Image 1 (cartoon, rainbow, N blue to C red):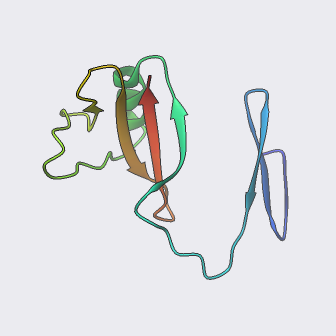
Image 2 (image 1 turned 60 degrees about the vertical axis):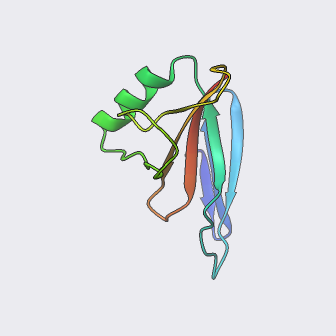
Image 3 (image 1 turned 30 degrees about the horizontal axis):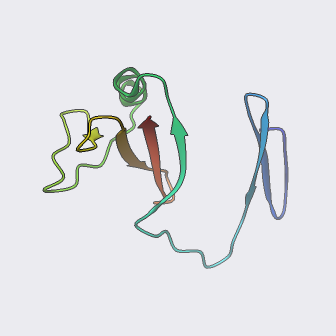
Length: 94
């Protein structure tokens, strides 16, 4: 974290500065709010799993054991997980 105030936080993500704003009465939605495109989703999912991240398995979606869904054309892969506040986050390999 780079800095914080009563309205939110500035986080450094590599060379990018991301501002997270605190919203009173915010309720998480079922759609991803933030995601990362990674070079190898299986490697990234395993590394996060080793740190305690639990990936969400959606019934009927056909995800693999890591929770990774592969698009019908095989070109994209996505895995979803929740942050501690219940927001849906994602990993993708495109």
